[in-house]
Amino acid sequence: MQKSAMPIGPTTPLRLTLRAIALAAGLACSAAVPVALAQTGTQTGTQTAAQAATTEDTLVMKNGQILKGKIVSETAERIVFRVRIAGMETEVPYERSQIDKVLRGAAGDTTPAKAPASDPAATPVAPGALPGTAPGTSAPSSTPGRFIEGEGTRYYVIELSGEFGSEITQTPIRQALKNAKEQKADVVIFMLDAKWEQSKLEPLPDDAANFDEIFRAEDIVPLFVEEVPTTWEKPPRIVFWVKKAMAGAALLPLVAKEIYFAPDGKIGGLGNLTFMMEGVGDEVVREKQRSLRMGHAEGWAIRGGYDYRLIQAMARIEYVLSVRYKDGKPELFEGYPKDPGEELLTDSGMGAQSDTVEDRVNGIGNDVLTLDERNARLLGLSKGTVSNKDELLDALGLSRGAVDVSDRSTRITRDWKSGLERAQTQIRRLMRDLAEVRVEAPGDYDARTKARNQRRRIIRDIRGLLRQWGEALTGRWLYQNQIPGDLQLEYLDSGIEIEQKKDKKD
Image 1 (cartoon, rainbow, N blue to C red):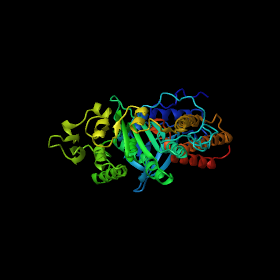
Image 2: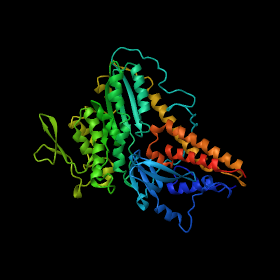
Image 3: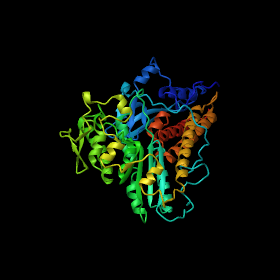
Image 4: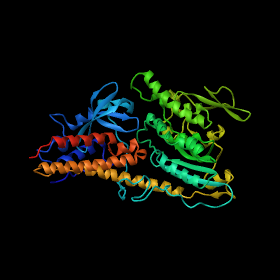
């Protein structure tokens, strides 16, 4: 049978990809194959695909995942949502506590962001392999490295670069901290450069989604403020050097007492909560959601010894914050400057005071606060501005006589990134394999059973990878690559099992 010529890959738009997956799954099926296996995804009656697209509903989940399909039923507690996976429809119940927004019909028309152009060549991840490892190997921190001898202050450097919540995440950080503890480090230095790319030619990112990355940060910051102080015999100094810490990554350095900036360093990008959930529910509900988010972010800043009003200024467009200096020390106050020497940090952001698109894209302007090396230093948040590791060591007094004990730091972060890349590649390949399972004519009972078993094996493999690498598979990545969540796959698997039990031998 001829296969669909439509390529199925991460760059294909969502609706087009679902249609292509459906065709790939259904073209070779016989008329006798049950609907759950042979569903082609075509519209019934005179309804066109374009008309169907405008009636799609959208669920925006709190984990960042975006689901498109149709609301089947809803109560105050949950929504039953019909989705299509690899050409098959399944109905999945979602608790409202998991859902951030419900967009009905044309209001849910959301275009996915640009995804990678192609899959990188990679070796499949072995089932059961530990995150961050090559197939058949153990976790990087499972065996102690060599102990580095030497007199003097012992320092350990951990470079955090890449996408926050994916490449910068708790497992490799925990592994690196464990290695730093084995090396009896006196100082642990985090060099933070989280990916933050925006273009004025593309839609600005959703502000609420940016701010909601703080919930992702809450899986990471306890490592610094809870695990290290309670599990180390002698807790080390924690130092952050910031090149880029936007959105959820902004909270990481704010839990440390010592922060240094690169010349172009920035902390901010928490988004504008003023317009969060605009049009969803009433204003009382929206304000409760804003307050919940603010409380989380402010709490971590306070733990680090910083003024909670900095978080308010980072997140709310209507919040006006200024600073004055008394005896050389900064003093924050709400409202506009009135006296000479006072400086405006953020204005109301309304009307003529609104920042331009270019300002927002570049993380400048003053609708919301973005800490750069200048204002962070003047506000007493930054200890100094340094361009690289050597300058930082010099500023910390570690350039002479100190011992670099960063034994396995680079390997840990490198292995995590390469393992994640392999897992992502394998998940995409398995989704294509799932779509290509078909029953050749005449499609007897044995052929249908074989196809169902094959589908179930693939679904189990995908679910295993999703569970194994779940912390690093962001909602954005799942959406860009049209990857269903674990719950959706569980219901799809159950549906196939039920269909098999109902089938009869020819």
